[in-house]
Image (cartoon, rainbow, N blue to C red; front, side):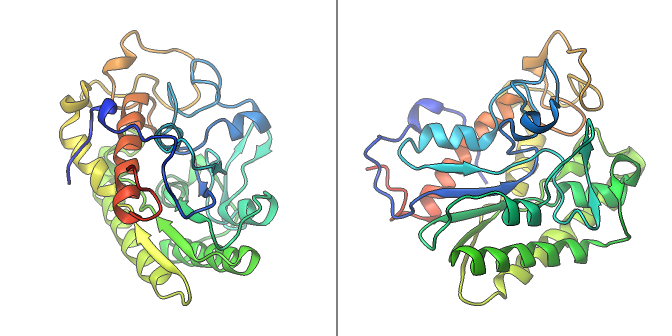
Length: 288
């Protein structure tokens, strides 16, 4: 796994050839570009324009690189896979789950689109920290994997979706949100879920599935934050989530808050993701 830091080498011409009509992402706060804020006015300043970070999120960085590829971003901070099991509520506003995003948000999807699924963090954190969510009924990581399968089946039926890109849950066991005593359990839970989810989705018939392993990318980035000019030993710039007291050295923090990476991390994740898309789909995202 290698990290990409030099933005100048990654920009793609506006004449990029591609076979996908558009990219459609179903996701949570790591991808949210202000969707939650439009519904709930959360998170507040100094969060950047409703993002759960201090700058653009990774998919927005991808959009800058892949200039001529339309991207539909359904990411919602706090999104779970199924609100009938566990959900997030901000300022009285219920965050749409994966299944809700698919059922209620019009995207004009077709079989010529690439569907990105990047979700599961909140479901798993709800198992570890149920007090941080509204738990409707007991569930396990196996239910979460089944919900992702259900969502993809819905996309198949609704839009005749064929091309799916899965992003595993990142190693949030290494983030401040998880107590030190819970980190081994969290790591095991995340790894079990990611493996099962990928196995179950790959077993779905009549679709093409690729994996963009952000989990491995984050592990490397967390091992070597200095390559970003960042540190992890200084904790989050904003402890908790939604607080308004920002640290004085936000550009030095890997963690923006206890749950989320900072803008520098998102930027480099976006550069890496762009290269991954070009590698996984060379005919669709051809820079030359």
